[in-house]
Image 1 (cartoon, rainbow, N blue to C red):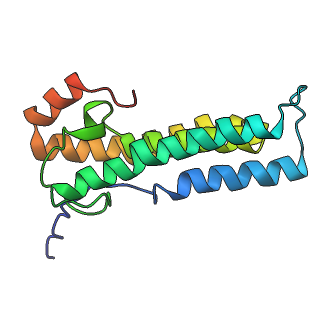
Image 2 (cartoon, rainbow, N blue to C red; image 1 turned 90 degrees about the vertical axis):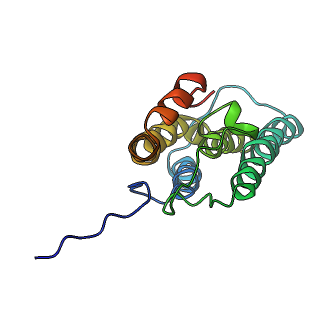
Length: 161
């Protein structure tokens, strides 16, 4: 019997961008099947400005900036690829998981934009799924690979915000 080579990547169990996508789609479908009336009406322009602003801000600040920062180190933002160094610049000074924070904020933005209570209710489940199925395996991988350096980074920078 031969030993399987260990893969130099986090044991992430799901495709991370799929989690917020499923959250939003499920919320829209649930709202269609079992609508929840919030009890107050927000003018569409306010919903579009606030929800859209959250989406655009999250994608710009925590999405594009994070990807650009990762790629500037020669690394991929893909969690299934090896991590060669701990990135502590850009948005990674604010949060250890800017791309996952962006995904949760996008769900929140869509909940507001669509005035969809279901998306709002499902957003914490999105965060929990990302936490347990993506972030914890990534952290275990980084701790085993970088040891004390990663533990020190974890001490200085919060997981979310």
